[in-house]
Image 1: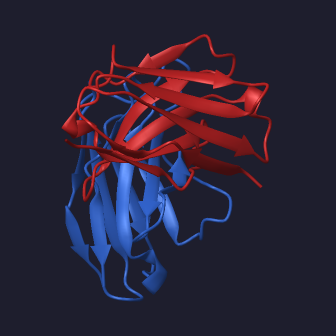
Image 2: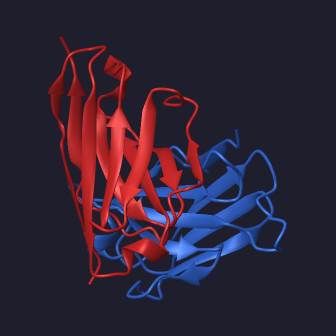
Length: 111
Length: 113
């Protein structure tokens, strides 16, 4: 199985300041069709997760543009340009290239 | 808008069975693959299973293979997860999601004697 490793586990942030989360996969996530199926999810306290980013860098509808994704093959990053209070929660990366699908362990973002 | 409502969770003894349902609305259910994802209390997310739009292709996590069965009824816009031989480690909130990763609110399954 593909192991997804996130860092840090916990990320203290300051409102208005940038934040960055790393995600590394144990295998390349480039699929045979040329796409890289790496997603980022946000789970706010007490809520269901929601997807923020798909295929490395594409924002889902309604996701603020302060969120951005980047990376390739095995190394990926989620960046928040200016953290807002509503960004508190746990962030997960997930690979959709190989079966079984696997999630990273999560990064808790707290003010 | 997309709406997914899970049901069927509860407390069950180890070794027993439970069937979860997920009622879908707001999109063309029969055109989309569907997933089950679970989250143990205080833990991270674990993908459980997927079923393609036509109900033919299915994949499972190793932790549930041979015990859980994913199915769907496109005439009823409903996704199912049949869980047999339940174990304490299956205790979790179970979410259904679309293949574009829209999530339901989840249903809690507790396996305990």
